[in-house]
Length: 290
Image (cartoon, rainbow, N blue to C red; front, side, top):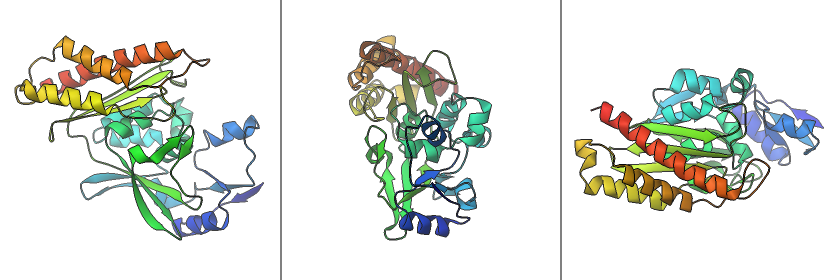
C-alpha cells in the first residue's frame, strides 16, 4: 500500500488527481478501523495531517469556515459559542482521544448515516467546500452532499476543504440515543436549530435513513405554527401539543431499518421523542434569551 504525505493543499490536490483511488485519511478514526478489520484495502492512503491549511477555522463573509482538519476537541473548546449544536454533537463522539484525532471533514467524507456531526450540519444549513485541480472549488449544500449509504457527492479527484456554517442566530440542540451517552454509534440522533432572524427551523436526522436527512415538512410546520401564534415575538410557552405534533412529523420523515443496534420501529419512535424534547429545550433557551 502506497502512503502519500503532502505538506500543502496544492500538493494534496495534485496527489489526489494523480491517485484518484487513494483513500484520504486525517484522524484515521474511521479509516483505520476498516483497515484493522480488513474491510478495506485501498492501493494508497492520502495522509492529510500535514496540510496546515486544513487545520484552521476563520470568519468568512458572515460564516464560520471550518477547515476539514479541525478536530472535534477544537470545535468544543473554540466554537461552542458560535456553533453550539455542532459542539454538542462533538461532545458525544468517542473518547477524549478520538475527539482529539477525529475531524468533522473526516466524518463528512465517511458519510455514514450514523455520523454524529451530520444532524447539526443539516440543521444549520451548512455548505461543503470541495476542490480539485481540474474543477477548482465547488460549494455543495449539505443536503446534496450525501448520496447513499456511506457515499457522498465528491468526484474521484476532489477533496473536502472546509465546511461553511452560519453562526447560530438562535438556540441549537443535539441529542442521540445509544447504549450510553458517548463512545457509541447512535441508534438514532437528532439536531435542531432555531433561526429567529428568518423565523425558520432547521432539523437533522441521523441513523434513521440511508443517508442523514432533514425533515422539511416538520420544519415548515413548526415555523409556521410559531409564526401564526405570534410566539416568535412574544416568546411565550411552547404548547406541548405543538411539540408533540412536530415530533410526529419528524418521525414520519424517517426511513429506518432493523439492525443489531435497534429496530426500525424503535428508531422511528425515538426520533419523535428526541424531536419533541429538542424543540422544547431549544424554545426554553430562546425564551430565556429575551
